[in-house]
Image (cartoon, rainbow, N blue to C red; front, top):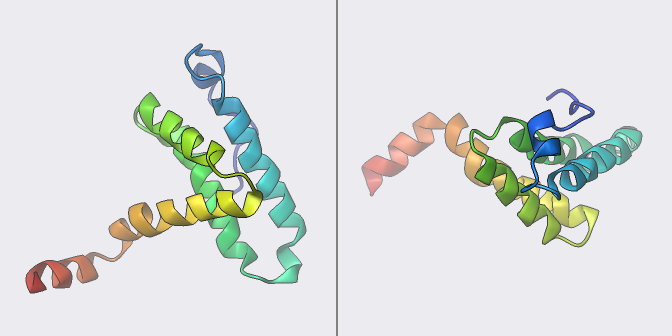
Length: 112
């Protein structure tokens, strides 16, 4: 997964309803930079980069503005960087994985 773009979309920066979006996105950028500095230290840094980038890309590519606000709200409910990564892991586990293992979904549906 490539690095996050340096700025959140202009329509989100200018929209009066989303004052916290830029702050949430800047958190993603800060955590991404911190993880990139630690990339040689191991400790699943690559997975952590995926989790934080996923949050940032969800803000960039959510089809509706409500999706962006939901991601930002969940991020602000997390007090520490490690908690932001947990939010990203939750999205990865419940959103991305559902799209990447079609054979498992079919097998599970047949058993139920």
